[in-house]
Image (spheres, rainbow, N blue to C red):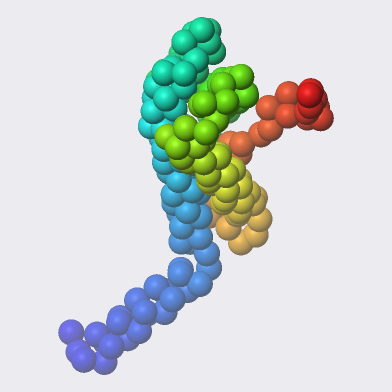
Length: 198
């Protein structure tokens, strides 16, 4: 094989590599991985909240012995929320994503009731442990909202890529097994304005 023939072969390979990378072949897997990374952050924030709940329950328990129903609801909601696992491969299954969302929404509701219980216990409201845990939970809820927002944006970007040119060519040929991912949707109760009672 002559030197000229080898150089031509290398030039053709380099041209092919540049044309494949420029045509969007890597776009679909890159955006899929970005969406999966955002999902991992949602899971991370859910885990952070689940780890804080037993400490909050224990702190409130010391003050609010007669509020066993609320404490039991929180404990049960946490157990259910942590028992449902949706990994990156399940992100195209709307049923599994909804099941996880419902469990997390139930935990959010139970935590809201638990924090409302604190209004009946002035000593608890001034307890440093309770205040620190309450602050941590509020911060976690904000982090969950941000993680969900970022996941929704990444899924939108990925799903749009599967449907737009030139990526649709790759999506209908090489990546035809890839399906759109399921974004988060608001709980039906979130559509109503909250009722504030004093």
